[in-house]
Length: 491
Ligand code: AMP
Image (cartoon, rainbow, N blue to C red; front, side, top):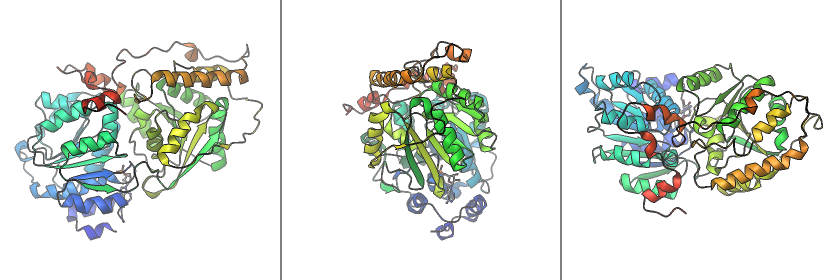
């Protein structure tokens, strides 16, 4: 189905044509006509399916009725509110909306935590029709009376599963309580968990359900490979696959912030342009890392799940799971970074002997049998570019474990995760005898110090420290508590 069949306003159609879109993606073909009618929608769609255009184009089309060139802020009230879990995702969605709306007089802006509120306040005060926001920062603006939401007609809860995972439910409930009851609400989520269904039943009215892929199905354009490799050989496995496939750029996922920094340093030393992207990086550093990757100045972006959530970088040819994710749903989010919007991609998961249970969880979720293949690496016996001091640090059982919420999965008891990590370290140890002369980087012998705001996700830490009456971190609840807020016993 082509965009021309939609009869979008010429200003929107022109922007879409400029983006180079010809045919609609499945979520667009299904959602756009429904959203144009003003109905509530519950959409199961992964990132990379084109869902931003799926909701923003019809919303912009409907809002064109209010389009005006007045300079008075009163003539530009917030009519559409788009809520997202992370600042990167909010920024991306806002950028896309700006592109779609560029030939209209509709204004949009984005607010998220971690940066100065003042420039955001100035934009809000001038009046914007479309407000893209993360929940914490939006509440700050509401409390400061910078954002008035009594004329909101459309609300989008994007990546709703992620918002609940992070513990944004109380914030969402507060925000939704400020909105007019008469409105259109759209909810998008990669999966329809019981919590998501409950959220939908509380806030959506008679929604049309749209599923472009079965929940938990993985993108069919992604070639998924699972390689059985010893924990010691994982970096070499990355080099091997990059060389063998002639891959220029990839994301490498790890389970902890500390592991992320360490792995990035090791890979950099081994000749790959590498940048680490994790929750302890400042917003500025993250955006710079992203830009460098987009420009091709960086080969590998080593990242944690939270930092990478929803990143829209087109044409990432490959994703490596250096660590098998502790939360099987993260597997789907991770591999969603490649094979986006129809392009083919490769997702390589490096499985070591202690990962069996985590792989079984992924099997269950994607409903496919996984049989990790051996990966014959050249010169398996010798490890010339493997400074052993680094290996040890990368496998440190509890130090590599992130205590500040970066991993974000409260469903699995921490002791299990730590025990597994411990096992991994122990099983690998006999194969890695220490050489007295092995080079040691002082970085790796430093003790790990958890950030002082251990309870708050790192991306809200700055916001929490901001001089507002409400400390956002107190609302960040692990998933179990989210279930409890719904009055459910977590299963
Ligand atoms: P999203 O799932 O909204 O993050 O979109 C993923 C990527 O697909 C974005 O870079 C969009 O620019 C791109 N995209 C969205 N719709 C289309 C389309 N109909 N044709 C080609 N690319 C698209």
